[in-house]
Image (cartoon, rainbow, N blue to C red; front, side, top):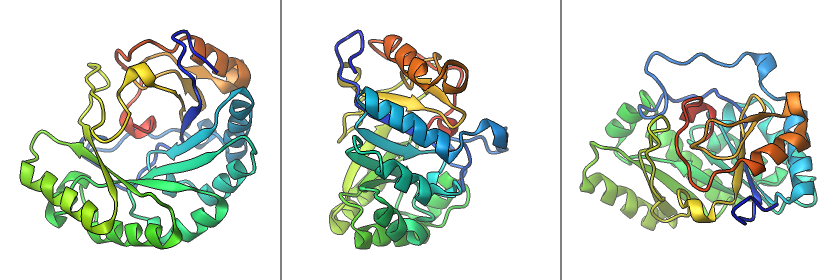
Length: 266
């Protein structure tokens, strides 16, 4: 698939749930969120059908996100379902790592190729503050489990927060080097104002080469993270939703007042 600006669209990011087991300060309100009703969330079979149609149109890479994808019931089964679709060349996941020690081996066996782990600090107290209660040791155990399972290369995603100092960033870099991990720094974004920049150590945020579409947990295909446009697979049909999202993909992201990071997968 090629969009209006001749970008080759081969990548679909799928938010499998709006639920999360952390409450990161930059992602989720302290008081919680209005969760989607169960009937609004796509079934595993619906997600697999979207991937199958996407593959027929040229999608080759899938990334599973959330919320937190590992809290989605049946996530290992979903990976296996996607892995059976011949045209899909790579299945990846972005997770906070809290449950990864439980699922890493199963995910690898089901067909997951590699994993990104969100880790904004390696200082236990700071991590607990950012995540509003998260246990850093759970993430460390998840990283070791992912390494043992062969979900490599493992990439660490770090959101640069306004109150972080250089020493904290250096500690994350040191940890990544010692553990043989790749690290990427993401400047804190604002969907409502359209504030974003290119990922340091990655290609995200570079609109000129963007090759992705997005599927939300409730079945909307979105052309861009920073766009209000979205097309329902249930109302339009999967192929038509893909077509309309492709045709409306902007040259550059502007703003998104309809979604939040917890329900679009970042």
